[in-house]
Amino acid sequence: MNNIKDFKNLNQKKVLLRLDLNVPLKQGLITDETRINKILPTIKFLLQENSKILIISHVGRPKGKINKDLSLDPICKNLERKINKKIKIIYENIFKLNKKDLFKDTNDQIIFLENIRFYREEEENDPNFSKHLAGLADLFVNDAFSCSHRAHASVCKITEFIPSFAGLQLETEVNALKKVTTEIKKPITCIIGGSKISTKIGIIKNLIPKFNNIVIVGAMANNILSFNGIKIGKSLKEDGCEKIIKEIFDISKKHSCTITCPEDVMVGKSIKDKSKIKELNQITNDDLILDIGPKTINKIKDIIENSQTVLWNGPAGYFENPHFANGSYEIAKTIIKKNKSKSIYSVVGGGDTIAVINQIKAINDFNFVSTAGGAFLEYLEGKELPGIKALK
Image (tube, rainbow, N blue to C red; front, top):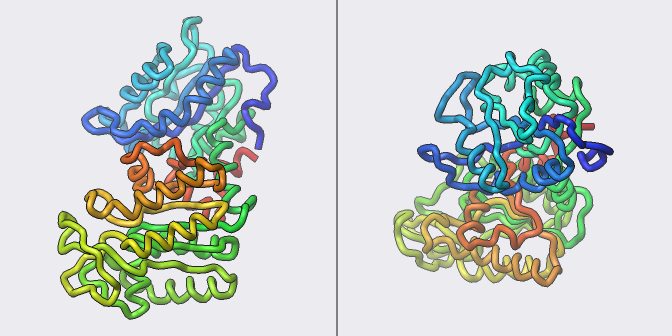
């Protein structure tokens, strides 16, 4: 996989840059700029090399139809302010665009194409659409790791028609994930949460043979407590997971990987309640388990202290209510402390986990924070991502 930095002379080259600028929008306002901030190094590098940048991205799921609420316009304006440079956005039909008509004004250095998912051909990985896109530039750069699990035209098929390279952010993401999948420093720990154990079973099964510890928290842990005969009251639980849980324990025994679950919990009668510590044998029928308790926090802290690498995906509790955010905050603080002493390598991913660390303004205190969602999870499952394969 060639990196764009390997290209010898980018001066005046037209670079088709695929980004993931799919940020949350509320009434046209961006509510989380993390994804925009992450691509700034690639933009700045290409500007420094005096290349002409043609940006492709998407917002939401317009399903091949124009939807003005999903325009890239607010994102374009946000990026303009961040780099202090004028950016042109083209609303015209992509099929009517021609390479020689782009960048006619010598002052144009960055041009945005409107939401690529306004074209049904994008998600169909259409070869003619890919070929047309490729014809608009001299080379293609994929800096959208988070879209690379999709076999879409502007991620996958396009590489057949134009010299193609990985962007700086994509390479950083892949290198970080290699440190928790193939180039591991042990002891290594995975802290995994979320509501459904069935959605994470692929990751858990793939990581158990490589990891020393798997710590299961959040609503996922309720399934395991219930499997072990512990009453969980009216807590969130996924049905029909007994076979999955038995499989997790069987594989972990085979590979000497320790599975850690809550030893005490914080409960409330509703998600808006205040928290109360309970031992596992004290949970009543009207209790909701909404966070891990102090004994569990201390156990997880000890595990992190004795780890050289940690992967964290999924909060420990219902952090939206501050009374049930302590478990997640304590996990974050322990990893950060180890990070500052350079005694751990930390990778964090998942929208809720990022929301937790944003709440304590700690997004820069981990070695790598992934905004990739599905691509992040599929990579951890050991799947080859179509967008990465295409670059090879």
